Image (cartoon, rainbow, N blue to C red):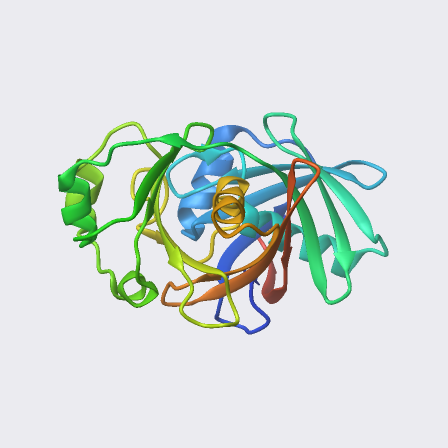
Length: 265
């Protein structure tokens, strides 16, 4: 099975978020896909299968579980297909039968994702202590993604967070992760964020596109604009441009392939 390692949301090798992309000739059973994802150890591994024309199925596995949607692994899979075919546009279909239209957009790859709402949420002090947050501006919850959103006032504080992940995973049950965000302190971006998810994946996701399904709408409402530039201030760093349009979030990003090989059966 052909397998690729791709760095997403970056134009540099060893930056952004690494994803594995496995091209399957036929459907694999869940345990096999989970074992492969656990063996590779990236925050996500995508399994893609050609259906017909420019349509492909896509499934996403963390080292711990299957998830329905992942931005950086979708971007990575798109990069591999566009580099190996003459297609200019493709459509992925995920495990929930949601269609994800993808197209080339100059030097970028453009992904269309659904938009999800957030609701009010109370965050326990034990979670804030585990994250190292002493002051917050707002808290929300994305029911569809099972992710808590915490806004703080300083991008510098956000970049310096060093969570206690043992305490963090014990601080709350029934979620996939917690996203911490702040307004940008530099002119090149509108907002910064980091995503911690020891409940469902790895401790910290280096660059996360899937959270833009609710995070872009959050900042678009707050800033009064529909076109935004985001920076993920993880150790590897990453960036993307997003836009709200026709109840979709458009995510623009680049990707770099760093490895091509074959997974032995």
